Length: 359
Image (cartoon, rainbow, N blue to C red; front, side, top):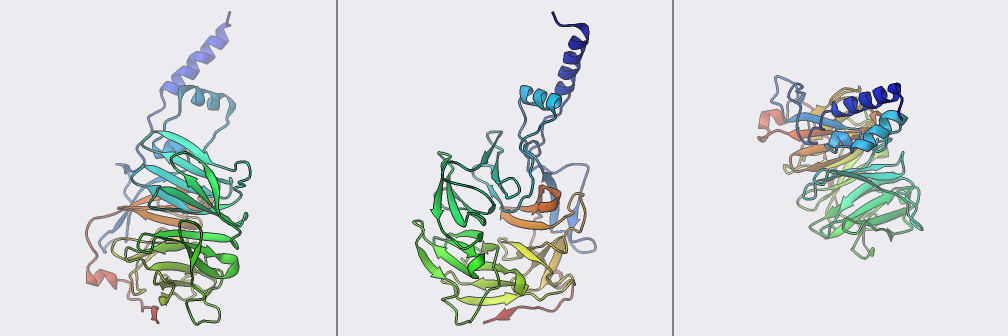
């Protein structure tokens, strides 16, 4: 028969667990905290929504006995270690976070209220997942910079299989709905390739341009609605824009610590207006440029609070929402774009000269 102290302990456990508030939906903004950019007197264009460090932050509630076990043992699962690539499947309501620190891809299914991970299986070693992309067939592609491979994950069956290997240290990846090709940064080979659904190479950017060495370890990729491919060329401190066939169209960026300059460019994403959202990891900001390379505004500063960063790395845009991997803060921050297009005078609000170069 249980002793009195044990009964009291069990009662306290029940009371503690019952007092836990239900998780707030992932894309719902807090009512008591408003953070917007750019700051006044400029018209705000982006607002902070929330940070996701664990499944509960994405609105995924834990079961009673799982919470009880964690309360007793202190062990917790699902916490992000070192996020990089991030992707939100708006149709399926799933948030995917590539976590090379944990060697997994976190899957937070906000519609089903479930959390899972994509991890190594027999013959498929997932060591350092970096980039994420989803094609029209709802397959998820994962670059692994240590295994020198690109993996394909079937969202229906949950099967993880090799898609392309060997690849020379793949990092960035993006699917192009115009060309129906998957573009991959071969960082170790200083090249970007475009492959079809069978993994056959159809485009090599270095071969398509009469330049002795086009890139210096290219990393992150993004595709706009016209099918143009944007490549982060970090050691040249540039963002380069290409046609789907791999021809260089333009580039912008210069090295420096001024707000309009680049210190350590990483993740890149393009919104419906053609604005370039770029993670500048060293300055702990997301910098927003127009399609001519003019700085429009920046988001964030160094810190651990809402809208602050410590090495922002990956970024993606889904509808009105922006997802940023805040790597050393071990979280993904979510922002919402506010309605209304920027005025002409706002586009030159920083009075910065353009660094765009057109071929």
